Amino acid sequence: MSLVSPSVNDKNRIIPPELNVPPRLLLGPGPSNANPRVLQALAMSPVGHLDPYFLQLMNEVQTLLRYAWQTDNPMTIPMSGTGSAAMEATLANIVEPGDVVLVGVMGYFGYRLVDMAGRYGADVRKLVKPWGRVFSLEELRQGIETHRPKVLAIVHAETSTGACQPLEGLGELCREFDCLLLVDTVTSLGGVPLFLDSWGVDLSYSCSQKGLGCPPGLGPFTMSPRAVEKLKNRSTKVANWYLDVSLLSQYWGQDRVYHHTAPINMNYALREALRILAQEGLEASWNRHLTNAKLLWEGLNDLGLKCHVHEDYRLPTLTTVRIPEGVDGKAISRQLLTEYNIEIGNGLGELAGQVWRVGLMGYNSRPENVLLLLSALKRVLNR
Image 1 (cartoon, one colour):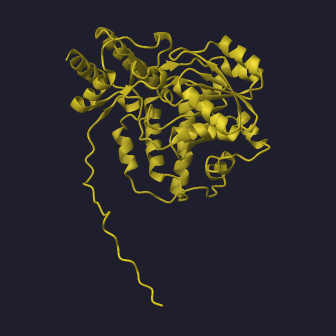
Image 2 (cartoon, helix red, strand yellow; image 1 turned 180 degrees about the horizontal axis):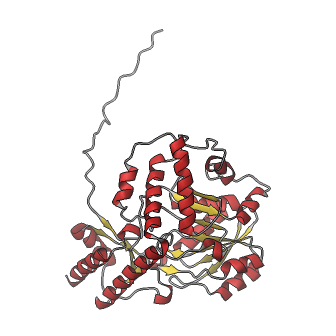
Image 3 (cartoon, one colour; image 1 turned 120 degrees about the horizontal axis):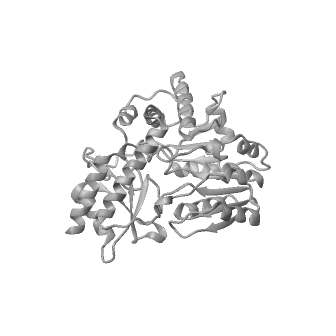
């Protein structure tokens, strides 16, 4: 019997042209344009994921993330995945079947927390606010007293609405009821004041592509010692192998035991993004984001456009703009993209068709970008 090798089938051998990416200005809800220094770091040659150089770089990334979040949590790492992976990691590691998890829902990503917690067997309870509003501390106290959760999960910067949830006093409240505090900081890290330790936050996650001015691909993640203790005392295994912090800690901790092949170049990029943030300084970055947001808000007002969220709770990193009656919002955003290479976001969930979402995050939070957008928006609306 003779073996005959099959011949190569070239039927599907289609070779696309070389990359020619359009020069977009990304002023939507994310991703944002990356700082050129970050792109240079991303293009450097990879080393091995257990190379001594990379192990030292891992330490530097962890230290810089702690600074950005204002935390001393030893378990602070970039998850090898987007922000949604880091989001899932917080719930996968802390939730056991039957645990009561109370979620403060005030937009699309609150409902995502509800969905994820339910998939890990939580007894999920909800407090719900209209999209664009925030919770008072008293409302959250009443919810905790009623439901007695093991975890309270809430979004600090709701990307779907542009509202910023106050966190002061919430950590103390959670400790009063022996409850862990889990906070989504995806659209606030780097651009909005954050003090995780001072505010008593036990678990938090973010992303690389918004306020940090880095391409998408890594999900910053942190756990307080209280949260780590709950993880250690689980009666069941973490249901997600890839995101199991008890395994990941052996790679990111002192032992450096192989867990997975880390995205080397993405960590180069995140290190440079965090290094830029540290060079600027947190307070300077927060002030820059607020100054440019106010410039945008004033310009929108001059155009006769209104913001969806009250200024007291409005995010400096993301603004939801009410679409005027009789205006096709998607047509306007499409014209901005095709004629001016400017991307803005359309409404999400309950706000679909009602708002545009304008992001001024990280490297893109600059006055020239605000003025360019306002000028283009004025021309398209007038037309």
